[in-house]
Length: 181
Image (cartoon, rainbow, N blue to C red; front, side):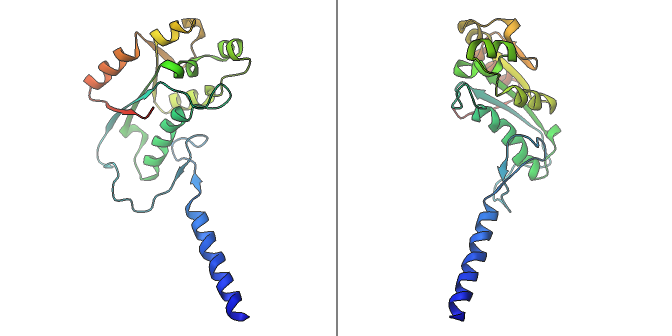
């Protein structure tokens, strides 16, 4: 009987260690968004001695009208996972271009409420990204094609002529494109 108790205890300890290893953590760059798994000793990371220019292309929204766009939250995740490796936010120059279905993420509270009958679930995330230096752009073509105007734009978001214009502009300036739509 004692043997079975030891086996059960061992299973419990191993299981709880696996569960603990699989929990996500907040921060260190954005505490309220972008939780990530801590990866001990990964074989591949970004160099802590370099600066990076990253361009996120977001043209879908799997979160719908009621939830944060998970792709926009991935920008926060990117910051946090690299922050956990010791990188400083100043080493990561990040630009986000939203277009297509992602255009609604750039609406201010009043316009979102008018269009969808609720507040913009991305509003606080946009402010948080802006607060750590992420540059946010909306495709003017996508925005206008959906009947929106500059008065509908959320405060931290800037208007680009088009997503294509922003993609060409920032890639020409050395930004690495991340397109995970």
